[in-house]
Each structure stands twice: as structure tokens, then as C-alpha cells.
Image (tube, rainbow, N blue to C red; front, side, top):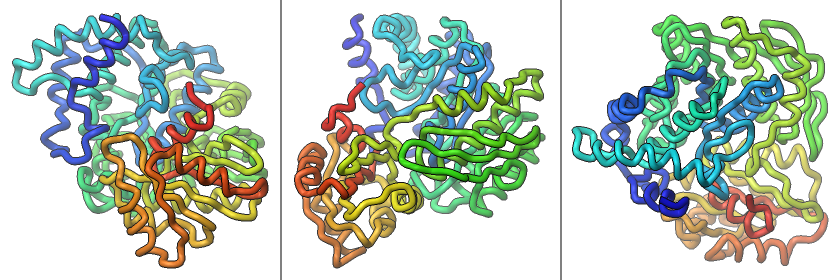
Length: 441
């Protein structure tokens, strides 16, 4: 098996990242994942884990935790999804993506079990289940001290949820994947809080009251301990520009007078504060990471594709925001951080998202919107995006481009040096824009 053959084998599996319509409760089977793990000796039980769920900010929060643990000298495995440019980005050890030869080696070990499982009750594992098991096996082979795992979708039925974690992190919960997770915040929070284990420690970002009520109930039922942003952990931003943010943080363990992060937007400060809460939680297990190490780790954390400034004059910013809540936060952040004369928007979104809600969140002061589509099978035709955009804002100037590269070129051709081009609506759109502008990996 070559690396390309390994990826082709993966691509032959059921992939819910590409499918826009499926039966969530009958398609996501933890029993299948547990059976898969049993065949391989349950590698996930042999590694201490941080488990990160929520709607937005999971990857950034995972990146902050990963950076601090690495700064402390631990061997750390990071598992996130989806990838931007290369499959190898999903599975990292000490910041380095898994090698092509290692992908082949791990896949060769998994393949016979996968074929045998096809004859069993729950069938062959899915794409994401195999990716998750690859991370567990690879991390075990590398002898890591901690693995930092980002939930794929939901939490309760997600394939990462077979771990026995002592620290669960829940980032802000908002409306997303509603056709699968439920139509209310309570329903969605129920699925997200499914990662809470008995007697574990839970760190939660700020939540809407109905979502927090569900989280608190799950914590109580599991006999867990909960730390909340704005109740147990407090932060105050005192400087923000196009390069970094500085803030003060107060936690149950003490005060950090000045912390710096390179990720932009007030929401990233909350993600960093949540990550520090998770790092402090392991002190209850006798693992103490010094405040200076936490400070250095946060400052070194990177997470591309999220309020990511690619160019100056004009500013070119990409972000993967794809629902009403995240887009509202994004437009607010852009206004607060950047000074510009006109705003150009390149916008494409997946058909399984709340397109009308997303379009309603788009700022009314945009000079021009270019509706486009990524190469994903789930991408919404740009003509339909334009139609919905005009229903939410009849005065908008909306044109159509049939590829992200075409849309970026059109925006770059019209924007002047004192303007800003924002490219968003989907992480796939953001990724293709980064590739177009030479920011591949």
C-alpha cells in the first residue's frame, strides 16, 4: 500500500463530512467504534486525554491546550478535523503532521480488521471512525503523554467519545447541524454534553442560559466538577490590534496579569481562557504547569483559517464561519480590529447549513458581495446563495463567481489598498482562497 492508495482506501468509506443528508442517530454508532477499538487492544484507554466539544472554537481551544502542553515539555498528540490542505494535518505529534509512511503503516494495521467488521452487525467503520482510530494507534506508538481530541460532530455519539477522559471542554454552543443534533439549543447542548464522564472535570465557555442549564444537569448527573467562564474564570482584554491581543485572566488558582495570543478576535481570548481552565484542571491529578509556561504556550499557538489575516493593502482575511451566530461575531470582530474604507465579501456556504440565517447575519454595509462555491459536493450553487442574500438585503450588490479562485480574483481586482476583503461562509471556501493566494501547506 502506498500513501495515495491508503487515502484512496479511506475515501472509499462512508464519509459524513461529504454527505449532506443522513440519519444521524442510526449512522453514528459508538458500538461499532467500541468493537473496532476492542480488536486493537483499546489504545485510547492508555493515554491521558483532553476532549473538546462545542459548536465554535473547538480547534482553536485544542490548539491553545496543545501549545501549552508542548511548551511544558510533554509529548502531545493533537487530533482535529477537517483538514485544510493535507489529510496529515488531522493527526499531529508535537506539532508535526503524521508522515506519509506512518499513514500507510497504521492503515495497513487497521485494514484487515475493517474488512472483517464488514461482515459483522454494525458494518465497516466510517471515514471519521478510521481517522480517529488511526490517531489513537499512532499516538500510542509515539508514546505521547497527552492527546488533545476535537469532537467531529455532536459529542454523545461521536467516535472520539470512547475515551475515558478526565477533562472535558465545551466551547460556545450555537445552532449548527440542526437537522442532526436537534432544533433547539437544549437538544444541541444535550448532544454536546454527552462527552462528560463520571467524576470528570468540565470547563465550559460562556453559554446561552438554556444550553448552560443542560450542561450543569449533565455535570450533576455524572458527579463531575464544572468551571465556567464568567463565573469561575474571568478575562479582560486591554489591547488588541491586527497582530495580537493582550488580556488579564483570573482563575480559581490565581491571576495572570498579562497574557498574549496571536489569534485575533475577542472570541479567541475566551477560547484561550477556556484552555487555561483545562490546563489548570489537571492540577487535581497532581500535574502542575507553571504560569510562565502557560504564558509562553498561549503566545505560540497558531490556528490558520480562523480570522486569519493573509495580506495587507488591501487587507485579506479568511474565516470558516458558517452559521448565523459565528458570522455575527466575525463581522463584529472585523469592524473592531481593522480600519478600512470599503468591505468586500466573498461568500460561499454548504447546502446543509441554515443559509437564510447565515445570510441574515451578513453586515449591511458591505460594498460588494461575491457569491461563490467551493469544490465540495455539499457546496450551495452561487446563484441560489445570491437569491437568498438579496431576500435578506435587497440593496446589496451581489454578483456570482463559479469558483473561489474566480471570486478572489474579482475582489482583488476591484479593492483598493485601504479596503478589506473578507472570505468566509465555509472552511472549504477559506481553504481554497488560501491556496489561491499561495498559503498552502
